[in-house]
Image 1 (spheres, rainbow, N blue to C red):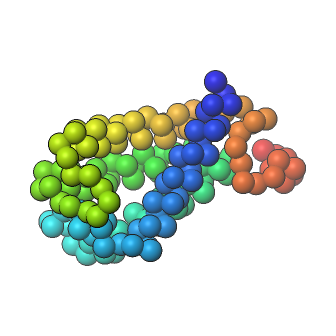
Image 2: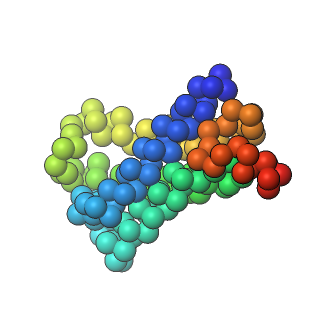
Amino acid sequence: MQKNKELLRVILAIAIAVVGVLHFAHPTPFVKIVPSILPHPLALVYISGFFEILGGIGLLVPPVAPAAAWGLIALFIAVFPANINMAVNHIQIAGVPDSPIFQAIRLPFQAVLIAWAYWYTLPSDREIQASIIPKHILAKFGW
């Protein structure tokens, strides 16, 4: 189970970092789904993209991985209104299905992402934890 946890950690980290990069490379679709009540939608897209990249990297740095996971949970909650806005107002984004089935799956998937990130707030086996920092460097700092 622990090996699967670490594989899924890498998948979540890469996926969330890639989505974060997309916030900068192609912000228009993300701006479209920001609820109109919120000010400065482009700035919000950049801020959320920054924290997605930071969270993705953080999941792969063992000493900060639990904090990064908590940050991702907060982020997933914070962006949920944009997902609701997209579903309720049927905002079309090129390449993203706008079917009722897709929307019915997409909104509850946010809970899956929260649970997935929560898994990494819990203790991990340090010997096999996925890391972008080499183990010998972590050992020098007592981790």
